[in-house]
Image 1 (cartoon, rainbow, N blue to C red):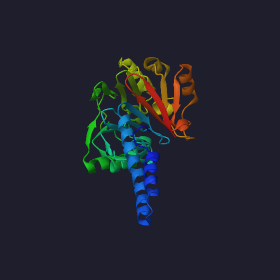
Image 2: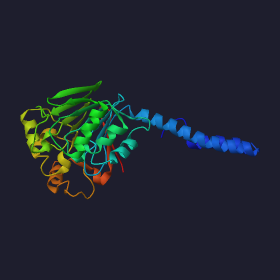
Image 3: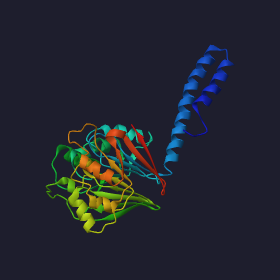
Image 4: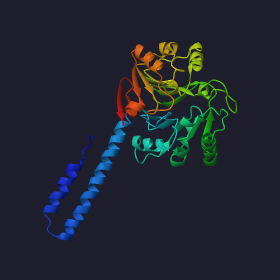
Length: 311
């Protein structure tokens, strides 16, 4: 951590004062002061480091097991969470990836109401101040989704139903594009909920991320037929890398350098599918997996991407 204060410096100063003081009461005082200064200097350094990080865009693919959860930290001090995973693991992940004093989420997006995307959001709403929620409102009666909706109503959180493409301006040269769905799904019964997923594209200057939820090949085909611009450096692979997503035609349009697969270690679904892995490898796309790497973080300065992982 690069800042003008350090623990060794603090301890050195206190030890010097301590050795020059013979009075037992003074020695006890300096012991307490030493501990206090170390904590203060650590917190100052943590805040300085957090502020330094916010000079760039961070996209954190959180390791929450078998599910999706993506935290976006913008250089304009916004926090955006897309999906929350299957359980309360999301709370620990947010704690590790946000400053301890940062308890606000400017935007929460639920791509679709399957439990591996929505369950973790219930306690996120209870622990964080959420300013706005985007969802499709598609009909689904699972206990997790119903509890999520009840919590929104209880807190009277601002909610918007996505039913058309739109751009969300987040700051200078930073935009979150909602590119799917483009019809009103509110209170509609849909056989395949995966294909109601909200698909977004995050663009910061020359850096770009395509985030697909659990969208499968039928959605990919709709996007291709619509001539929607899909090219992106980073592709969040649809449906945890299952064989039902990530067609060759879709990859030809996106042309990603990196493919992130959000799946849990030794999951019961066999995700990611070997066919999908092979297709990504054949296209010379670097594969990054939560089950193998832990949390995957992209730091984007608008031109270059830096990748780190936090196990």
